[in-house]
Length: 140
Image 1 (cartoon, helix red, strand yellow):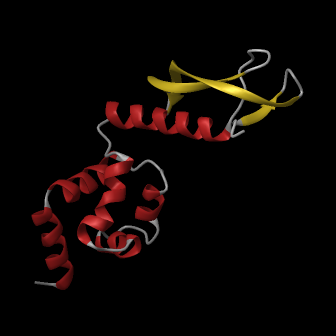
Image 2 (image 1 turned 60 degrees about the vertical axis):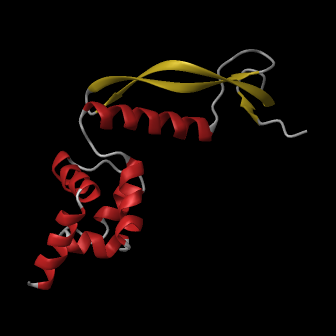
């Protein structure tokens, strides 16, 4: 029996739950966004229940909707940059003259400003731009 369970406030017990894909609305930075999320429902009474993992997934979907609408680089692309250029997160932050932990925070899901997003998008898209940053830092 590998059934997922969570606590139902209505039943006052740990219960199995079902998932439903639903259209959701959320507000971020004063604007409302529509996105596709998940809703967990108690299998016994039908009440919506809280599941931490589902909440995290829905928050990511809201952030993705914000990123798309505001032309902010996706989290997936941010996470690919260090592997693509074989550079650590802190060295990349320092290369960009950002705070030492700035890029690391973006990798954890924090939202970059539009200005920082544009730099990261350019690095992702244009290896020659990345090379020019390295050359500039070396003083050549």
